[in-house]
Image 1 (cartoon, rainbow, N blue to C red):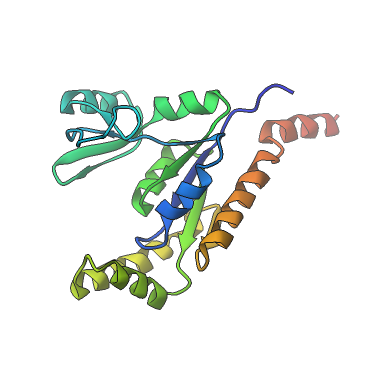
Image 2: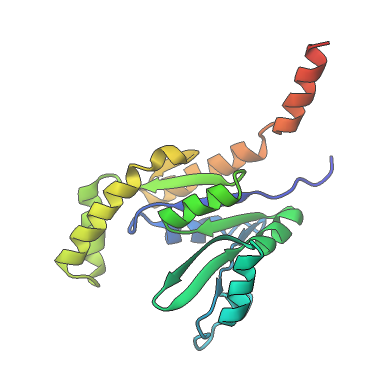
Length: 203
Protein backbone atom coordinates (compact mmCIF):
# COMPACT_ATOMS: atom_id res chain seq x y z
CA UNK A 1 0.00 0.00 0.00
CA UNK A 2 1.16 3.54 -0.69
CA UNK A 3 2.04 5.74 2.23
CA UNK A 4 -1.01 7.21 3.93
CA UNK A 5 -1.33 10.95 4.21
CA UNK A 6 -1.00 12.24 7.73
CA UNK A 7 -3.90 13.68 9.70
CA UNK A 8 -4.46 16.88 11.63
CA UNK A 9 -5.38 16.32 15.29
CA UNK A 10 -6.78 19.34 17.12
CA UNK A 11 -6.43 19.02 20.89
CA UNK A 12 -8.34 21.61 22.87
CA UNK A 13 -10.22 22.24 26.08
CA UNK A 14 -10.60 24.84 28.82
CA UNK A 15 -7.51 26.36 30.41
CA UNK A 16 -6.13 23.98 33.03
CA UNK A 17 -7.23 20.72 31.41
CA UNK A 18 -3.67 19.68 30.52
CA UNK A 19 -3.46 20.27 26.77
CA UNK A 20 0.26 20.99 26.88
CA UNK A 21 1.12 17.98 29.04
CA UNK A 22 -0.82 15.58 26.82
CA UNK A 23 0.65 17.02 23.62
CA UNK A 24 4.17 16.68 25.04
CA UNK A 25 3.60 12.94 25.48
CA UNK A 26 1.90 12.50 22.08
CA UNK A 27 4.80 14.24 20.35
CA UNK A 28 7.26 11.63 21.60
CA UNK A 29 6.04 9.54 18.66
CA UNK A 30 8.38 10.34 15.77
CA UNK A 31 5.45 10.23 13.32
CA UNK A 32 3.76 13.17 15.06
CA UNK A 33 4.69 16.76 14.34
CA UNK A 34 3.76 19.85 16.36
CA UNK A 35 1.93 22.56 14.46
CA UNK A 36 4.14 25.67 14.45
CA UNK A 37 2.28 28.98 14.58
CA UNK A 38 3.10 32.16 12.71
CA UNK A 39 3.43 35.41 14.67
CA UNK A 40 4.27 39.06 14.24
CA UNK A 41 5.97 39.36 17.64
CA UNK A 42 9.75 39.41 17.92
CA UNK A 43 11.61 36.21 18.72
CA UNK A 44 12.63 35.86 22.34
CA UNK A 45 16.10 34.73 23.37
CA UNK A 46 16.61 31.11 22.39
CA UNK A 47 13.57 30.88 20.10
CA UNK A 48 14.21 29.50 16.62
CA UNK A 49 12.35 30.50 13.45
CA UNK A 50 10.45 27.51 12.08
CA UNK A 51 10.70 25.58 15.34
CA UNK A 52 9.08 27.74 18.00
CA UNK A 53 7.23 30.07 15.62
CA UNK A 54 7.41 31.41 12.10
CA UNK A 55 8.40 35.02 12.83
CA UNK A 56 7.08 37.39 10.15
CA UNK A 57 6.27 41.05 9.64
CA UNK A 58 2.72 42.33 9.97
CA UNK A 59 2.58 42.85 6.20
CA UNK A 60 3.61 39.23 5.61
CA UNK A 61 1.01 38.04 8.11
CA UNK A 62 -1.78 40.07 6.51
CA UNK A 63 -0.72 38.80 3.08
CA UNK A 64 -1.29 35.26 4.38
CA UNK A 65 -4.74 36.30 5.62
CA UNK A 66 -5.65 37.67 2.18
CA UNK A 67 -4.45 34.46 0.53
CA UNK A 68 -6.61 32.37 2.88
CA UNK A 69 -3.53 30.61 4.25
CA UNK A 70 -4.62 30.40 7.90
CA UNK A 71 -6.60 27.62 9.53
CA UNK A 72 -7.18 30.13 12.32
CA UNK A 73 -5.72 33.43 13.43
CA UNK A 74 -6.19 35.95 16.20
CA UNK A 75 -4.79 39.13 17.71
CA UNK A 76 -3.29 38.71 21.18
CA UNK A 77 -1.78 41.65 23.08
CA UNK A 78 -1.13 43.71 19.94
CA UNK A 79 0.49 40.82 18.07
CA UNK A 80 -0.97 38.49 15.45
CA UNK A 81 -0.86 34.70 15.72
CA UNK A 82 -2.09 32.08 13.28
CA UNK A 83 -1.80 28.49 12.08
CA UNK A 84 -0.47 28.44 8.49
CA UNK A 85 -2.43 25.98 6.37
CA UNK A 86 0.34 25.35 3.82
CA UNK A 87 2.81 24.24 6.51
CA UNK A 88 0.27 21.84 8.02
CA UNK A 89 -0.55 20.36 4.61
CA UNK A 90 3.16 20.00 3.78
CA UNK A 91 3.72 17.80 6.86
CA UNK A 92 0.56 15.78 6.21
CA UNK A 93 1.68 15.14 2.63
CA UNK A 94 4.85 13.55 4.08
CA UNK A 95 2.66 11.09 5.97
CA UNK A 96 3.17 12.84 9.32
CA UNK A 97 0.38 13.58 11.78
CA UNK A 98 0.17 17.22 12.82
CA UNK A 99 -0.79 18.00 16.44
CA UNK A 100 -2.41 21.36 17.11
CA UNK A 101 -2.71 22.52 20.74
CA UNK A 102 -5.13 25.45 20.68
CA UNK A 103 -7.94 27.16 22.56
CA UNK A 104 -11.58 26.23 21.98
CA UNK A 105 -12.53 29.19 19.79
CA UNK A 106 -9.47 28.73 17.58
CA UNK A 107 -10.24 25.02 17.28
CA UNK A 108 -13.67 25.78 15.85
CA UNK A 109 -12.06 28.05 13.26
CA UNK A 110 -9.80 25.16 12.27
CA UNK A 111 -12.80 22.84 11.92
CA UNK A 112 -14.42 25.30 9.50
CA UNK A 113 -11.22 25.71 7.45
CA UNK A 114 -10.31 21.99 7.44
CA UNK A 115 -13.40 19.84 8.15
CA UNK A 116 -11.36 16.64 7.96
CA UNK A 117 -9.40 17.65 11.07
CA UNK A 118 -9.94 15.28 14.01
CA UNK A 119 -11.27 17.27 16.95
CA UNK A 120 -10.44 16.09 20.49
CA UNK A 121 -11.90 17.93 23.50
CA UNK A 122 -10.20 17.60 26.89
CA UNK A 123 -12.39 17.78 29.99
CA UNK A 124 -11.46 18.22 33.65
CA UNK A 125 -12.94 15.63 36.06
CA UNK A 126 -15.11 18.44 37.46
CA UNK A 127 -15.16 22.23 37.67
CA UNK A 128 -14.07 21.98 41.30
CA UNK A 129 -11.00 20.01 40.25
CA UNK A 130 -10.35 22.60 37.56
CA UNK A 131 -10.59 25.34 40.20
CA UNK A 132 -8.02 23.47 42.32
CA UNK A 133 -5.63 23.16 39.37
CA UNK A 134 -5.93 26.86 38.54
CA UNK A 135 -5.38 27.84 42.18
CA UNK A 136 -2.29 25.63 42.41
CA UNK A 137 -0.71 27.59 39.58
CA UNK A 138 -0.56 30.56 41.94
CA UNK A 139 -0.42 32.98 39.00
CA UNK A 140 -3.93 34.48 39.06
CA UNK A 141 -6.12 36.16 41.67
CA UNK A 142 -9.52 34.67 42.68
CA UNK A 143 -11.50 37.00 40.42
CA UNK A 144 -9.60 35.86 37.31
CA UNK A 145 -10.01 32.21 38.33
CA UNK A 146 -13.79 32.69 38.59
CA UNK A 147 -13.82 34.19 35.10
CA UNK A 148 -11.82 31.23 33.77
CA UNK A 149 -14.28 28.78 35.36
CA UNK A 150 -17.24 30.61 33.83
CA UNK A 151 -15.52 30.58 30.45
CA UNK A 152 -14.71 26.87 30.88
CA UNK A 153 -18.40 26.06 31.34
CA UNK A 154 -19.27 28.03 28.19
CA UNK A 155 -16.58 26.11 26.30
CA UNK A 156 -17.77 22.74 27.60
CA UNK A 157 -21.23 23.56 26.20
CA UNK A 158 -19.58 23.49 22.72
CA UNK A 159 -18.44 19.87 23.07
CA UNK A 160 -21.03 18.73 20.52
CA UNK A 161 -18.85 20.33 17.82
CA UNK A 162 -16.07 17.81 18.49
CA UNK A 163 -15.41 14.22 17.42
CA UNK A 164 -14.04 12.84 20.69
CA UNK A 165 -13.67 13.77 24.34
CA UNK A 166 -11.13 12.68 26.94
CA UNK A 167 -11.48 13.32 30.68
CA UNK A 168 -8.05 14.19 32.05
CA UNK A 169 -8.32 12.90 35.61
CA UNK A 170 -5.10 10.91 35.22
CA UNK A 171 -2.44 12.05 32.74
CA UNK A 172 -1.20 8.58 31.79
CA UNK A 173 -4.72 7.30 31.12
CA UNK A 174 -5.66 10.45 29.19
CA UNK A 175 -2.58 10.09 26.97
CA UNK A 176 -3.44 6.44 26.36
CA UNK A 177 -6.98 7.40 25.34
CA UNK A 178 -5.75 10.09 22.93
CA UNK A 179 -3.34 7.56 21.40
CA UNK A 180 -6.24 5.11 21.06
CA UNK A 181 -8.23 7.72 19.16
CA UNK A 182 -5.28 8.25 16.82
CA UNK A 183 -4.90 4.49 16.27
CA UNK A 184 -8.60 4.18 15.45
CA UNK A 185 -8.36 7.06 12.98
CA UNK A 186 -5.37 5.44 11.27
CA UNK A 187 -7.49 2.31 10.71
CA UNK A 188 -10.58 4.15 9.49
CA UNK A 189 -11.82 3.08 6.06
CA UNK A 190 -11.65 6.20 3.83
CA UNK A 191 -15.02 7.65 2.88
CA UNK A 192 -14.17 7.49 -0.82
CA UNK A 193 -13.68 3.72 -0.53
CA UNK A 194 -17.17 3.39 0.96
CA UNK A 195 -18.56 5.41 -1.95
CA UNK A 196 -16.93 3.06 -4.47
CA UNK A 197 -18.45 0.01 -2.78
CA UNK A 198 -21.89 1.63 -2.68
CA UNK A 199 -21.66 2.35 -6.42
CA UNK A 200 -21.08 -1.33 -7.22
CA UNK A 201 -23.81 -2.47 -4.87
CA UNK A 202 -26.35 -0.42 -6.82
CA UNK A 203 -25.59 -2.21 -10.10
